[in-house]
Image: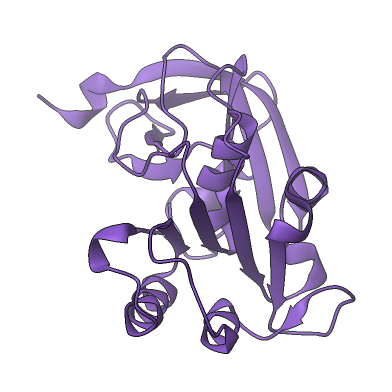
Length: 219
C-alpha cells in the first residue's frame, strides 16, 4: 500500500509562531493515540510524508504538532506559511515511544519536548522528571505549562546564555554533573541523534541499564 493512502485530509484549525522559526500547528483529532506517539504529515496527498511527534494530550479535541523551520527543508518552510482553513494530510498516531505511570526521566532537546508535553497533558505527572535543553531562553517551548506542574522536577539546561534558575550548559553536561541516578526509573530521550547517543552513553556509565533507556531521534 502506498503510504499516502494511509493519510487523511484535515483542515488547519490554528497555527502560531511561538518563537523565531518555531511553530505550533493544530487540526481536529480524528483518531485515538497514546501519548508519545508520532504522525506522518504531508502537504499533498501523493508526496512522501514527514514524521512529527504529537504534542497534544490524548483527550484533547485537536492534534497539535511542534516544528521548527528548516530553511532548506521540503516541508517546514511551506508549513510555516499555512493559514487557518488550509488543508494538510495526516496519518493516525503510531510508534512505541509511549509513556508510563511509573517513575520516568524525560530528557529533551529543543522541539524534542513535544512527546513529553503530550505525556504531561495526558495526566502522566507523578514521579516524572524533565531535563530540557535549549540554546536560548525562548527555546524552552511549553515551559509556562510544564513548570507549574513539575515544579523542581523541571530542569532547564541553557547552552547559549545564562538565565535565572537554569543550568548553564547542555543536557549532557547536566547529566554528567549528577552523582547518582535511580536505576529502576525509565529514561526517555528525544532530540538530535548526537544528543540521544551521548546521553544514552552517559546514563549507561552511571549505572542505568540499557533496557531502561528509550530513545527517539527528532520528530
